[in-house]
Length: 417
Image 1 (cartoon, one colour):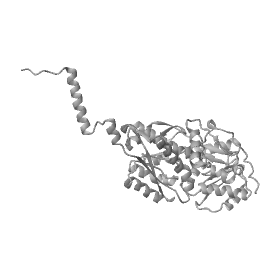
Image 2 (spheres, rainbow, N blue to C red):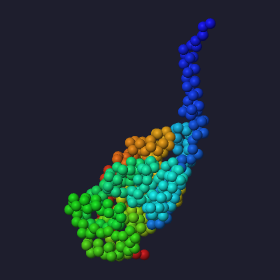
Image 3 (cartoon, one colour):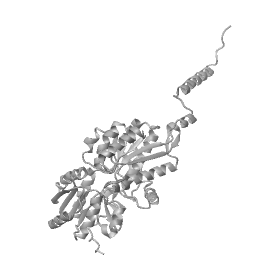
Image 4 (cartoon, rainbow, N blue to C red):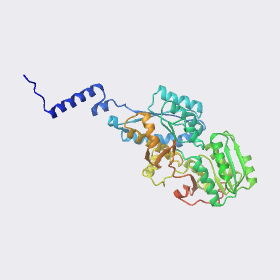
């Protein structure tokens, strides 16, 4: 008796069913419900950062709070959508206090990665801490986007740390903007002071280079210790030189101290660019709008940026924390997590190696514009230099992003009360 053959189409269907069954049993093929069942309960993101110590003001303002806002908004919509699991997964943000100590920051970061087994890592605060953590990120294949790292030598450093990216606008664009601005308003001489650490030293190298290409004289180029308690002797020395401009490359404690002691000593330069922290609304609030009028600062990411979501970002931040969002690296910290979310969605799962590769080559829509990395450095930065004008931090450089013309000379300090 001859065997009957199944019709060709039916035979093919039977083969497909058998193959699908085998794949399902082997785990290669999952139904939507099975994929959802295998999804992690949370995407855990760790961050060892200064919650106490001298760096805590900058760390909390620039990174911690913007990170918290992004997580709150992301979890409000159910979390990050991960295509592999066909569902949104909530985010759990874990902070460890590195107490403003670099060695502690590295140890805590490794604990988060090795012991706590977080899915992703966020960076610490400050240039030196970021450089210390970059090799750790690469060792454990943790794509990390540094917010507060500023150095003209990034190319050579990042070449050996492919998992570390830099978001912040760099000295290579900020310093030329400052020098061009001084030339524009007619500065003839400048005094440059800086904290004697990596941040200050590397900025000053560029300042010397770019000022050296102009006719601007630089009679004072002076470092000061990070723990400085009084600028009085240095202010008096600068005043005696009768320079037009003063540039300070220091951290928030130095920035606030200098702005306090200059008026107390009655010294008011025509052009004053202060250090990190000028872009904080807390800086304006500490001295009053008149007390910071005309002061310049590096980095200026303001609510006036022409990108979707930026206005809502500033409004949401104020609603959540009861204060204004600062206008330096703060919107960029929020944007870095937008990049991470989009990279996860493009890859389709939580594979860190693939996510790193996507971050390295793709363009991402963020509140600070279309972010894209070249050799590990973000090339999208719409505000280099800002200036306080009537209580508003305006972008004055580069000219194509200018929201107000620069004020020069700087108005007098308000009379003592």
